[in-house]
Length: 511
Image 1 (cartoon, rainbow, N blue to C red):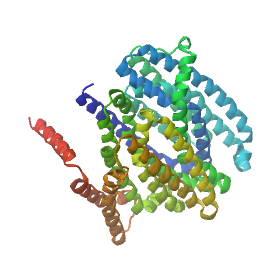
Image 2 (image 1 turned 120 degrees about the vertical axis):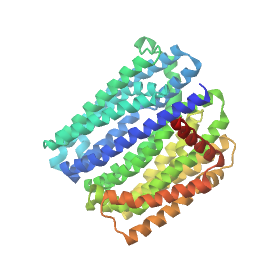
Image 3 (image 1 turned 90 degrees about the horizontal axis):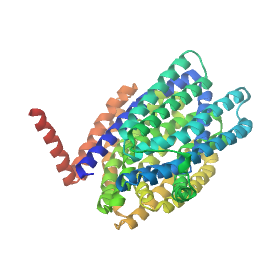
Image 4 (image 1 turned 135 degrees about the horizontal axis):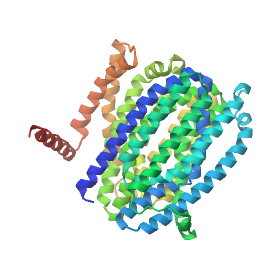
């Protein structure tokens, strides 16, 4: 693949990632308040708790998903189709076995679910039903069929994945609107979620067999030697995955055990906003995963260093704009989006956004380390992240409540994502670790001071009256950030490249 065609493919994949993400975000922005109004805050807390618990069952993937991307991506260069089919067949039938065992375990756990989490008596039957339906979704559907999405991802057919995922989002949102408008409850919401997810994954299956050359998944191709190879890579990827679940799932469970269901719903909104920011940033990072595998095969280490430093700075800049805007307008966003009763989530939201912001360079660094043979290190960091996150959250939740939970996440992010991972990747690719401070963090963060200052000044003189009013008042600060970042912190070579592309497009339109 030439440099131009590679750049074009990455650009298309990244662009459709962002389009799909913004579509999903708009749908969720409308759908979540609608669900809360129709279910009530307590029942929404139950819905969030059920999803958080089911999230842990996704660990039964055991990290094979990243291996699927790696093996498929490397085969594009090596052409070893039979090797790929053996590996993918082995993983698929392991998935089927794991999904069945997982569903049996979930069925056994459902007898103790309500008691373990102190769910009120009127909600217990509903809670178990929702848990089992979501179990079908995340175990019997997601685990086996995720193989085909991973294959498409490894083939860098990410734009096609985005189209299918957008269809699935639209189907779920419209179905949820219909059933809740008719007075149906959380059980029906779980059913439509499960069905729409099934249809989405069937499309991945059909597309993979249509577009991927000589793809063959068969029990005859399952062999012990391939299973050993798959496990040797995926075990460390599996441990790394746990860290992400700790960030988005464990907090909710700790709150339910130590506090109450109402606060679960409250905190889940703060998590949801920070999760949107995290997912927005990952749209480009995700596209890089098969690309990193390709760069490693071709030994293009200068290109990998570019990703680690230069690209990290530009991606972090988008994260700082989001975080700084939330610093200014976070409370107003909560009030106008889900209601004034959720203002108690303001401080946790600010802490979670800070955690997200400082973790951005680690997203690329961890991706590079995992895809270039350092998965054992990222796994160790992930395990340590669990200890720090859960330990600090449990220590702080009693004296500080929701703020303590969010502080636990922030502490874990700083120790594991900033200090450990960035130091390791700097050593591996032979540049001083302090370059992350001078070339990534400071250039991305300093213009944020202007954004925050302008935002609070506008708020001081003009109160915010609605979501759209908030967006309008956030624009001047965002523009100031872009101007300062472009003028003082954008490399001359990058400026020249961007200006050149704009000039060529303008010239082609004139012709």
